[in-house]
Amino acid sequence: MNSSEKEKVYREAIREINAVLLGESIMITKMSTINSILRNYFPKYFWIGFYVVHNASLVVGPYQGTLGCLHIPFSKGVCGRAARTGQTQIVADVHKDPEHVACDSRSNSEIVVPVFDSKKRLIAVFDLDSTEFASFDEVDKMYLEQIIKHQFAETPLEFGYKIFQQQTS
Ligand code: SME
Image (cartoon, protein in one colour):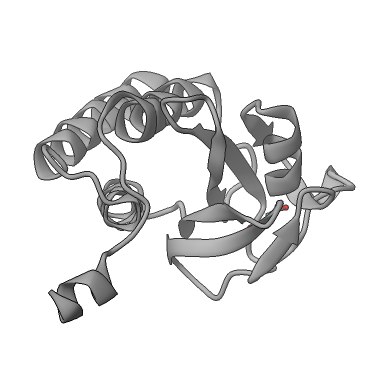
Protein backbone atom coordinates (compact mmCIF):
# COMPACT_ATOMS: atom_id res chain seq x y z
CA MET A 1 0.00 0.00 0.00
CA ASN A 2 1.57 3.30 -1.06
CA SER A 3 1.15 6.59 0.78
CA SER A 4 -1.82 7.88 -1.17
CA GLU A 5 -3.64 4.53 -0.90
CA LYS A 6 -2.98 4.56 2.83
CA GLU A 7 -4.34 8.10 3.13
CA LYS A 8 -7.49 7.06 1.28
CA VAL A 9 -8.03 4.10 3.63
CA TYR A 10 -7.49 6.32 6.68
CA ARG A 11 -10.00 8.86 5.38
CA GLU A 12 -12.61 6.12 4.88
CA ALA A 13 -11.88 4.64 8.31
CA ILE A 14 -12.17 8.07 9.95
CA ARG A 15 -15.48 8.73 8.24
CA GLU A 16 -16.80 5.45 9.67
CA ILE A 17 -15.35 6.05 13.15
CA ASN A 18 -16.87 9.54 13.30
CA ALA A 19 -20.25 8.31 12.06
CA VAL A 20 -20.45 5.37 14.48
CA LEU A 21 -19.20 7.38 17.47
CA LEU A 22 -21.27 10.50 16.83
CA GLY A 23 -22.77 11.45 20.21
CA GLU A 24 -20.88 8.70 22.09
CA SER A 25 -18.95 9.72 25.21
CA ILE A 26 -17.97 6.54 27.10
CA MET A 27 -14.21 6.00 26.98
CA ILE A 28 -14.07 2.22 26.55
CA THR A 29 -16.85 2.32 23.97
CA LYS A 30 -14.84 4.78 21.90
CA MET A 31 -11.66 2.74 22.33
CA SER A 32 -13.29 -0.58 21.36
CA THR A 33 -14.96 0.94 18.31
CA ILE A 34 -11.77 2.61 17.04
CA ASN A 35 -9.92 -0.73 17.40
CA SER A 36 -12.58 -2.69 15.56
CA ILE A 37 -12.88 -0.26 12.65
CA LEU A 38 -9.14 0.25 12.17
CA ARG A 39 -8.47 -3.50 12.38
CA ASN A 40 -10.98 -3.99 9.61
CA TYR A 41 -9.37 -1.36 7.36
CA PHE A 42 -5.78 -2.39 8.17
CA PRO A 43 -5.65 -6.18 8.64
CA LYS A 44 -1.83 -6.26 8.65
CA TYR A 45 -1.82 -4.24 11.88
CA PHE A 46 -2.28 -7.39 13.93
CA TRP A 47 -2.49 -5.74 17.35
CA ILE A 48 -4.43 -2.50 17.85
CA GLY A 49 -5.29 -1.32 21.31
CA PHE A 50 -5.05 0.99 24.27
CA TYR A 51 -3.03 0.95 27.47
CA VAL A 52 -4.87 3.08 30.01
CA VAL A 53 -3.18 5.15 32.73
CA HIS A 54 -3.90 3.65 36.14
CA ASN A 55 -2.00 4.51 39.34
CA ALA A 56 0.86 6.13 37.39
CA SER A 57 1.30 3.02 35.26
CA LEU A 58 -0.19 1.57 32.06
CA VAL A 59 -2.71 -1.28 32.15
CA VAL A 60 -4.06 -2.99 29.08
CA GLY A 61 -7.44 -1.69 27.97
CA PRO A 62 -9.62 -2.52 24.96
CA TYR A 63 -7.67 -4.17 22.14
CA GLN A 64 -7.91 -6.42 19.11
CA GLY A 65 -5.24 -9.04 18.54
CA THR A 66 -3.26 -11.65 20.38
CA LEU A 67 -2.75 -11.56 24.15
CA GLY A 68 -1.19 -8.27 25.21
CA CYS A 69 1.04 -7.64 28.25
CA LEU A 70 -1.23 -6.64 31.14
CA HIS A 71 0.90 -3.99 32.85
CA ILE A 72 3.60 -1.73 31.42
CA PRO A 73 5.29 0.77 33.75
CA PHE A 74 6.04 4.25 32.40
CA SER A 75 9.73 3.31 32.59
CA LYS A 76 9.38 0.43 30.10
CA GLY A 77 8.42 -0.21 26.52
CA VAL A 78 7.66 2.00 23.56
CA CYS A 79 4.32 2.56 25.30
CA GLY A 80 6.08 3.85 28.43
CA ARG A 81 8.22 6.16 26.29
CA ALA A 82 5.12 7.60 24.59
CA ALA A 83 3.57 8.16 28.03
CA ARG A 84 6.74 9.77 29.46
CA THR A 85 7.45 12.04 26.50
CA GLY A 86 3.88 12.77 25.42
CA GLN A 87 5.10 12.27 21.84
CA THR A 88 4.09 9.72 19.22
CA GLN A 89 6.69 6.97 18.86
CA ILE A 90 7.35 5.29 15.49
CA VAL A 91 9.58 2.22 15.63
CA ALA A 92 10.59 0.77 12.25
CA ASP A 93 12.31 -2.30 13.75
CA VAL A 94 11.26 -3.17 17.28
CA HIS A 95 14.21 -5.58 17.64
CA LYS A 96 16.60 -2.63 17.45
CA ASP A 97 14.78 -0.61 20.14
CA PRO A 98 16.26 -1.42 23.55
CA GLU A 99 13.14 -0.21 25.37
CA HIS A 100 10.72 -2.33 23.35
CA VAL A 101 8.65 -4.85 25.32
CA ALA A 102 7.74 -7.94 23.27
CA CYS A 103 4.21 -9.15 23.97
CA ASP A 104 4.02 -11.10 20.68
CA SER A 105 7.15 -12.21 18.81
CA ARG A 106 5.48 -11.57 15.44
CA SER A 107 5.63 -7.81 15.96
CA ASN A 108 8.32 -6.16 13.81
CA SER A 109 7.28 -2.51 13.84
CA GLU A 110 4.97 -0.34 15.90
CA ILE A 111 3.55 3.10 16.52
CA VAL A 112 2.34 4.43 19.87
CA VAL A 113 0.26 7.62 20.14
CA PRO A 114 -0.30 9.29 23.53
CA VAL A 115 -3.96 9.95 24.36
CA PHE A 116 -4.83 13.22 26.12
CA ASP A 117 -8.21 14.42 27.31
CA SER A 118 -9.57 17.94 26.78
CA LYS A 119 -7.61 19.16 29.84
CA LYS A 120 -4.36 17.80 28.33
CA ARG A 121 -4.16 15.01 30.95
CA LEU A 122 -2.59 11.79 29.69
CA ILE A 123 -5.30 9.12 29.94
CA ALA A 124 -3.88 6.30 27.77
CA VAL A 125 -1.59 5.38 24.91
CA PHE A 126 -2.76 3.89 21.61
CA ASP A 127 -0.53 1.12 20.26
CA LEU A 128 -0.53 -0.50 16.81
CA ASP A 129 1.78 -3.39 15.88
CA SER A 130 2.60 -4.80 12.45
CA THR A 131 4.16 -8.06 11.31
CA GLU A 132 6.04 -6.06 8.64
CA PHE A 133 9.10 -3.90 9.26
CA ALA A 134 8.70 -0.11 8.87
CA SER A 135 4.92 -0.26 8.48
CA PHE A 136 4.28 3.07 10.15
CA ASP A 137 5.21 6.53 8.92
CA GLU A 138 4.14 10.17 9.10
CA VAL A 139 0.85 9.34 7.36
CA ASP A 140 -0.13 6.93 10.16
CA LYS A 141 1.04 9.46 12.75
CA MET A 142 -1.04 12.27 11.28
CA TYR A 143 -4.28 10.29 10.92
CA LEU A 144 -3.99 8.35 14.18
CA GLU A 145 -3.27 11.55 16.11
CA GLN A 146 -6.29 13.13 14.41
CA ILE A 147 -8.56 10.23 15.45
CA ILE A 148 -7.29 10.28 19.03
CA LYS A 149 -7.51 14.05 19.41
CA HIS A 150 -11.03 14.18 18.03
CA GLN A 151 -12.40 11.29 20.09
CA PHE A 152 -10.72 11.96 23.44
CA ALA A 153 -10.06 15.73 23.56
CA GLU A 154 -12.50 17.45 21.20
CA THR A 155 -15.70 15.51 21.96
CA PRO A 156 -17.36 14.64 25.30
CA LEU A 157 -15.64 11.93 27.35
CA GLU A 158 -16.91 9.93 30.33
CA PHE A 159 -14.66 7.44 32.05
CA GLY A 160 -16.99 4.69 33.18
CA TYR A 161 -20.33 3.02 33.42
CA LYS A 162 -22.65 3.94 36.27
CA ILE A 163 -23.50 0.33 37.07
CA PHE A 164 -24.29 0.67 40.76
CA GLN A 165 -26.21 3.89 40.40
CA GLN A 166 -28.43 2.18 37.82
CA GLN A 167 -29.07 -0.82 40.07
CA THR A 168 -30.13 1.20 43.09
CA SER A 169 -32.16 3.94 41.43
N1 SME B 1 5.51 -3.38 22.33
C1 SME B 1 4.92 -2.55 23.34
C2 SME B 1 4.18 -3.38 24.35
C3 SME B 1 2.75 -3.59 24.05
S1 SME B 1 2.45 -4.73 22.87
O1 SME B 1 3.13 -4.48 21.67
C4 SME B 1 0.86 -5.06 22.70
C5 SME B 1 5.97 -1.70 24.01
O2 SME B 1 7.15 -1.86 23.74
O3 SME B 1 5.60 -0.87 24.83
